[in-house]
Image (cartoon, rainbow, N blue to C red):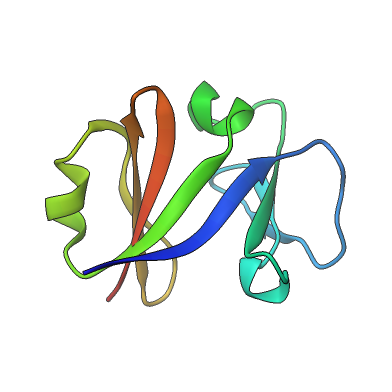
Length: 104
């Protein structure tokens, strides 16, 4: 199963109700609160995340087998758990970041 979830767009503009992810040094908005399923990502200068995530929009999918979908491209970010009950990973697909999300 692979189902569209959201699009993530890097920004330098602070947004209302941002969520701070300390390990990633990243502020994100909740795409569920956006009429167009947009997740805004605002990175601190020293964020350890790879440059393609900081500079290029990504598309995200809910999947039922994260490992299977991670194998479909070059690993950009190894799977990690940004919050309880969720595992996410990123690949590069023709140079563009793609996020896969699996509920656990």
